Image 1 (cartoon, rainbow, N blue to C red):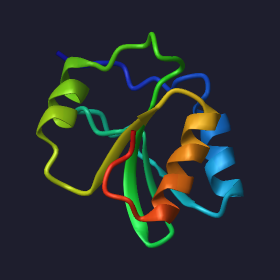
Image 2 (cartoon, rainbow, N blue to C red; image 1 turned 60 degrees about the vertical axis):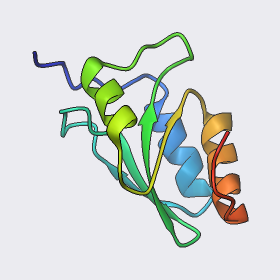
Image 3 (cartoon, rainbow, N blue to C red; image 1 turned 180 degrees about the horizontal axis):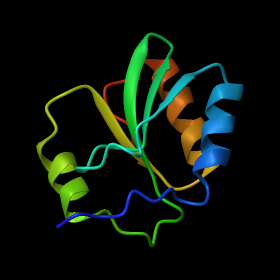
Image 4 (tube, rainbow, N blue to C red; image 1 turned 45 degrees about the vertical axis):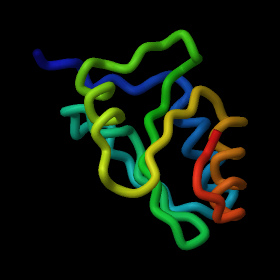
Length: 99
C-alpha cells in the first residue's frame, strides 16, 4: 500500500531550528517506503529523523518496520522543535542512547 508523501506542518520549523544550530539538513520526505523525513549531519554524527506533528501522530506501518529493524546509525522521531534541539544537544554529549 502506498502512502502519500505529505509533510507534517511542523517540519519547516524543525528544519529551520536544526540549521540555526549549525546542522546540515537534507530532506528525504519525498523518498517514501518508510524512510525518515530528514538526514541530519551534526557534531560528527549523521542521524535520520522522522518528524511528526505531535505525539498523537502515528508512524505508518512501513515506518514502524524500519524503526523496529534498523541496523544503521542514529534514528529518531521528533514531535516538535524543542525535541529536535534536544536531540542535537544529545549528539554533542556522545552518549549511547537518546531518551
